[in-house]
Image (cartoon, rainbow, N blue to C red; front, side):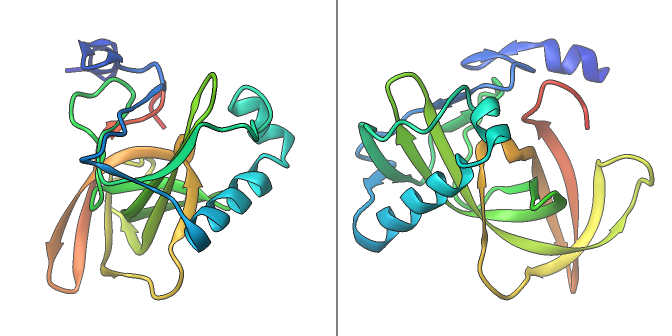
Length: 184
């Protein structure tokens, strides 16, 4: 199937290729953020929305009158796919303008009047080699995450859901589902 046909297929909550998000927080898959976690999340959002490019990408300024902030285990749907994102999903993402591959550690959500803001906490893995030069579809990565703090990224910085196949000291990361409207 061509990429155009694949991205145009209707399935799930909305059309593939629309670059949209649907979040379904319930008592089974989410917990309300409190204390230090809530403060860190609020500070991260305030810092991100201080950039004009982020405000433009997310359709306006940060709404300080949010309805709720929560941590999610699953129930996040990006780009019309029927399988939800959950803790432990591998992904390709951009952090500080660098392409990275990692595994989702946490997902945080803020519900506002007109939108949902989702932030992924991702443990990055070292990229060892691009196995298909010129395309971002198959990589060799370290089998363990990089030591240190995980990356926090807004959901539009997560570009692919990946399949991570461990093989000893290395792993293969294969891009599976795009979260964007075009192929990267």
